Image (cartoon, rainbow, N blue to C red; front, side, top):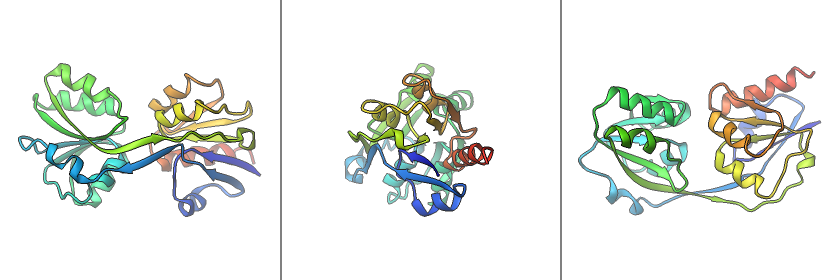
Length: 224
């Protein structure tokens, strides 16, 4: 039986229900995610702006009890869905931060944006918005801590990655077996992977776990 390593915490029942039959898996999260108490950041919300940027599902979880009124601009399809489920007004979402930044620049006058993010957030939005006159009020609402793990990579036929930080953390102590196929959730994660490995990388068309699982299933179903 082929075996796949998932490097992020993912619901086991959901995974078994959606992953192709006769494919084994193991889940070993390489990052520890901790939501911060709202006391750490609620006072930092700029009252002069009712527009919020959210770039991850972890941020949605961290602010879920705040009942914020305003407009949300979002990175990620599933992140947008979670906000909508929480009755937040999602004005627009893009799959990547670079796309959202360009959308804002093209459609909105310079202004202040309240940005909920993690302690390891990337600079993409800052590099696009700040030079175009926008201001970003950054509020760290969750923390990602790398986990120093060493695993027996030879036991796995495929590895699955969900973020550049998880890639960096994994490769700090591990190397994939030559036979291993690598599945990546999106372009940013794939770019990080190419800095560490020459193994074959299969990139999801849409950066969602659902599309990524479809890619895995398509690959292994084609081998039957």
